Amino acid sequence: MSPLLLGCIADDFTGATDLANTLARAGMRVVQTIGVPDVADRPDADAVVIALKSRTAETSVAVAQSVEACRWLRRHGARQIYFKVCSTFDSTARGNIGPVLDALMDELACAFCIVTPAFPETGRTVYQGHLFVGDTLLSDSSMRNHPLTPMTDANLVRVLERQLPAGARRRVGLIDHRQVAGGAGRIRERMADLQAQGCALAIADALTDDDLACLGAAAGNLPLLCAASGLAIGLPGNWGITPSETARHLPPVEGLRAIVSGSCSAATNAQVTHFVGSGGAAWSLDSRRLDGDALAAQVDEIAEWAERHWRAAPQHAVLVFSTARPDEVQAVQSRLGAQQAGGLIEQALAQIARRLVARGARQLILAGGETSGACIGALNVTRLQIGRQIDPGVPWCHAHSPDAGDQGIYVTLKSGNFGGVDFFSRAFATLA
Ligand code: ADP
Image (tube, rainbow, N blue to C red; front, top):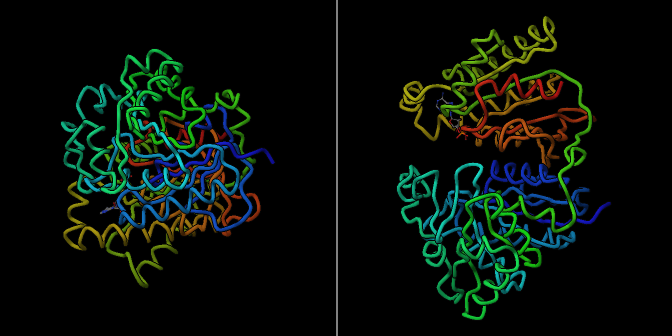
């Protein structure tokens, strides 16, 4: 088994896949685990990404889970720890980014840590410590109205300093763009200066992938980094790893194709419309039959319907979706309550995913962050091996599930707004 080089802790599920995908593209063999693994043996991989759901959890829970993940990774030899946060720095006035970072620095006896959510490929850049989403300051972007983590200050030095626990006495400095553009040596000088001035953390500017590569090279010896997935571009090179197709090679899987979609994002609506418009076999979930016997009957009908389609055309995918436009979602929510509707639909889709796998689906697209979390949970998947990218941020993965027999399944977790309009058909085509 090769040594574990990079240990990652992600504060949400699809963010973990995004990071795993970036590392795999840069040549690392990557496994993503769902939560902290409880088994003693570790996957054979260069990097392990532990996916937590800690972004909006109670701060004490987020800290405890993150420290537990860090200990697991260190116990298995990880040489560097990467705390993955959202590229819009999603957090509240209290955290959880600051408190988790503070605890991880204590845990690792880390004297200095670089922080940057920059991800130029997706329009996230940091200049003079201020985060931009495209050409808009974070605080003027739609993130200022986020229901859970409204971001009303784009100055990340200030945001992070406010989140650090009062007793922590850690200060935050800035590695500005001129220093970053000066290359790894200049960045290291700046880190030393900041430390001498009493700063333990620094927001790093980055406008381009080259900036991230310089930061990655300069950060080679730091025990802890905090970033969105952009900084991962620059890290594998520190271990002499270069991009290669073999890192993304997955074991072969034969079987039927299915799509389960619970995302109601604009992108997923367009993808469902495109699939149906192209003559794909699709079942629209009946939101009046979501629990008890009515749900059981609907799941049976769907399984039989899917089998009929697969018998007629084994290469074709079946789609089961609750994906709907905002007015339709509103109607369901006013009938059932928003939380209740979301939960019932997630659980129904999870049961359906399980049944389709039990009937032979081995190539599975799951659309929606919460939806894919529920489906992966129902399938008892605990780890994902990361394969080739389908669209930015969305790779195929290989997973084992008790429902899928020895060869396992291919699965892809598509977060709502990711993917082109023909994502579904293209995803399967990349496997052919
Ligand atoms: P995204 O990644 O687009 O945010 P998620 O799966 O995370 O997608 O979230 C979608 C939420 O909407 C889920 O809780 C899902 O159960 C719920 N949902 C899906 N379809 C409907 C619908 N037709 N009416 C109401 N809620 C829905």
